[in-house]
Length: 313
Image 1 (cartoon, rainbow, N blue to C red):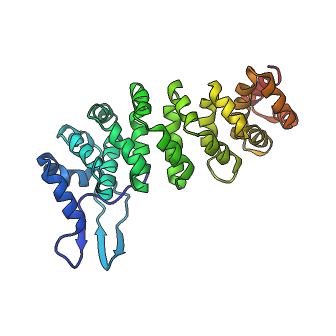
Image 2 (image 1 turned 90 degrees about the vertical axis):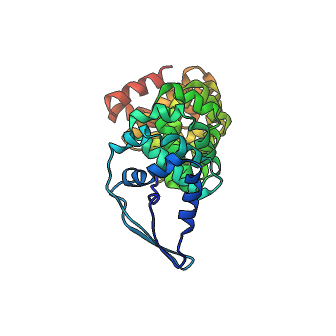
C-alpha cells in the first residue's frame, strides 16, 4: 500500500497557487461538505510515519508535511459526510485527484466501522475504475481498498460482479512488486467465493500464478501458492493449472521450497490428483514420488498427513 502526500500541501513554488490546490478547489467547489473536511482529512488519514518529502518537478519544490496520526478521526470524518464527496473524487478524470480520493477512502476503510458505509455509498464501481485506469499508486491502493471491503462477505460477489477480477489479475501480472502483493492479497480474499474463482480463471490468473511460483527468489511463492490453493477446488482451475505447466513447478517446490511452501504444494497436488487418474499419472511422471517420500519422512506431522493422502488417492 502506497500512501501519497496529504491533501493539505504546502507548496513553495514560483506561482501563487499550485496546480494541486487548483484541482482540489475545483473538486471542493461542487461539494461544500468537502471544503469543511479537507483539513481533518489531512490531519487524520495520513500516518505520522510518513517522512517529509521534497521533490523537484518542473523547477518547483513541493514540501509535503507529515501530520499527526489520529485513528479515531476516521469514524468522525465518515460521520461528518466525507465518504460520498471522496467517492466523487475517485470518479474524477484528473489522475492525481483520483489517486488522492482512492487513498483517502482506503484510509477510512481501515476502520472496520466504516467499511459497510463505504460500500453502501457506492464506492465499489469507482474503485474498480481506478483499478483499471488509475496511476500505479491509485491502482495499488484501490486493490487494498477493495480488499478491505471484501472482508464483509456480502461484498465479495458485488466486487466480482463490478468487474474487479480482470484488472486485479492484470495488476498481478504486470504491476510492480507492491502492486503484485496487493493484487494477490485482494484476489485471495475475493476467491473464497466460487463465482469469483471462475472469473479469475477466465481472466487468465493461472499464468502469472504459475510464473511467480516458478521464481523461487521472487518473494511471491507463498502468496501465489495460497491463491492457487483456493482456486484448485474448481475444475476450471485444475485444467488451467495443468495447461500452464503448473505440475512441474509444484513438484520443484516440493523438492526445494521452504517447509511451508512444500506443504502448500503438496496440498495443491492432492486436490489435483483426487478426481483425475490422468493428473495423478502426470504428477508421477514429473518425478513427484521421491520428494514426496522424503517429505513424508522429514516433514511436519501436517505435511506427512498430506503426503499420505496424495500418495493413496
